[in-house]
Amino acid sequence: MTPQELKNSILQLAIQGKLVEQRPEEGTAEELYQQIQQEKQKLIREGKIKKEKPLPEITEEEKPFDIPESWRWVRMSSIIDMLSGYAFKSDDFKSNGKYKLLRGINLGINTIRWKETVYIDTISEKIEDYRLEKGDVLLGMDRPWITGGTRAALFSGEEDVYLVQRVLRFRSHGYMNNTFILLLLHSSLVNSIGGETTGISVPHISQSQVGSIAIPLPPLAEQKRIVAKIEELLPLIDRYEKAWNRLEAFNKRFPDDLQKSLLQMAIQGKLVEQRPEEGTGEELYQQIQQEKQKLIREGKIKKEKPLPEITEEEKPFVIPEGWKWVNIQEIITGITAGKSSKCYEIVPENNKPGIIKVSAVTWGIFNQRESKTCIFEDDWIEEYRIHYGDFLISRANTKKLVGACAIVNCITKKLMLSDKILRMDFYPHIDPRFILYILRSPELRKQIEAVATGTSESMKNISQNSIKALLVPLPPLAEQKRIVARLEELLPLCKSLKS
Image (cartoon, rainbow, N blue to C red; front, side, top):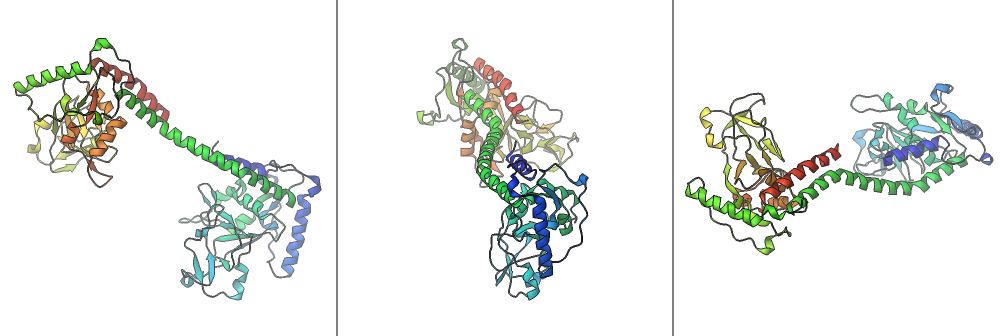
């Protein structure tokens, strides 16, 4: 049950007479109703309130639930003095002045916000009826219901505040508990007229609609006990809401946090066991060096300037004895950037040769539909053609996606690298899927974000040299494959927790 559902449930119990017990010595609602009618006649004779048209009897169909025998169903306006605000001229409004005005914009849920308050300098005698008194209950008539409740509040008693049109004032003249009236306005009874709001641009309700609502009337002493009980429960509800919000936040984070934990365990060598018969990262590294020298001699790759030795201070955590810290440069045969070409957008089903956009590469996903078509056919460069199995990494994107990588698992179009997408080619001693996963780990994300440049959060850049210098742990190839298999078994479970 959500906090709002709990509040609604308690409120429903209150208006059904199920929150506190009934006490015969407190009298009945019928007696209270008759007292109110006598007071109304007196106020009418004194000219303090206007005589209303008789309201129709409440039918059985209008009563949504049973109430205690000592209670009574009544029309809202039959027991409460209701008044809609005065139509002041907006041309007279000032940002400061002698008399403060209360408009619908000032009303929130159980609160009056004096932000955007307006004033006027003069008040005529006829407008005195619209002066608010301490204890008045107020209801916004425009957009009365917002997320979390009704735009209704209790007036605390500021002087010289006058009511503007489109706000309803409820005054009980001492025969009703004002907070109980407020509870009724927040209840499902008043919300039931939500489907009857009028107005196209600004939905609103009328005074007659609210006045004709059938509401349950308990004796005055019981109203006070209901209010006291709810005020006793409010701190408990608040504690429940805080705990609920913490749990909701945890539940939202949990799949992502679990995924990050799995990736971090993988990069630290804690996801699968180490097997001595599979060799070591050092042995694998030496095999890669031998292959590198062979490819250099054959002219297939260029000799690169060696990176500095990795110091102990640079190693972010301890890895298994059989693993080795290396830079990305030491495990790739090359890194290729595409070209910047003058292109125009095309519809996805167009099969003309194209250049992929940055949106084509997100975490683990390659979307060939995210592409542009070149204006000139001679813009095509075969060297930059994307093939099935290519390892692509985003050099420019948002903070969350810069450095995002994917392995091309579907390619049905003739596509070319853009200058913002890099292709990395690995030695056969490396499982590219292992690199795909560890580049997503919190540690590698930290490294990438540290070297990404750009002042805007919406676009960051990372250079080829920065990617080559990224520090990664190197396990034996067989262990790389077992880590990948384990992640491919566990990560889909994390995804299922989100749904």
